[in-house]
Image (tube, rainbow, N blue to C red):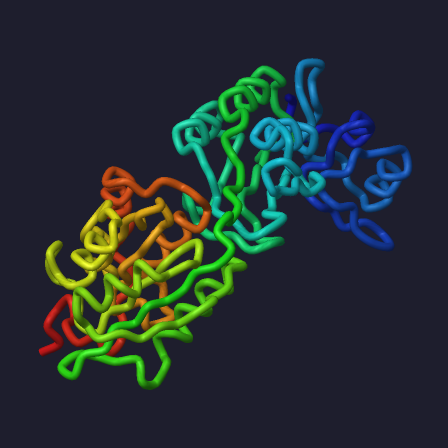
Length: 335
């Protein structure tokens, strides 16, 4: 692509690189200059103007962005996404429903490594998306680019973006009570958890309160019928043999992971019920509506995704979340 100042007599058919004020208005950058535009430039007393002119092997900015976006998401409707029309060298990709951003980081990085004039920005992998929310944007910096670069970028990122839909429709909550521990008398935690589920399009079907005892919790777990079971204990779960994990085992379930490298959210555990349904032992920070590690585990399990030990281990990078005001044991002394 050619770029630079040219005499206005030779500018017809080229792309105007910068907006220009002319009598009666303004010629906006990015337009293809026609006869009337050249006359307006002459009337403005300009001898030359900065333009871009595509070569035979170049692709215009809008077409280039469209090609890459459609390669990233070959069948948008099938994966819950929508590709917006190209404008000023940019194409945005939006979620069409609630779900998690399913991204292939290595392939997306390969797109950005193809040519510095091609830029692709996305949300974080597995970020919860709402319907209409932007998940990614493709921006071509110049007014045109070599077709070979565009095709290489498209191939590098083909199929690298999709949306994992929520597949679990409902959950029930079991709360334990203990004289020496926190309780749910105010309902604050229950409301926060219900709001989390609602944001995923899920229902909270039932809330049961039982004593903070292993056998009592095990019986409640065995009786739970919802597709997902959540437990909020009165006392923090501080050991793999504590009330919550041990109750899950006595109910015939299995603990998949105890502890989470996300803060707040360290004291979470999760596993499966006897029949394979997901179960989460929520940390105390789940009583707050603020983002914490419980959100990341809940959202992935709600989307039917595996959350094994390696998955949770990876959460630690970027897992140091915002400090929560009023935290009983702050990360750092406030002296």
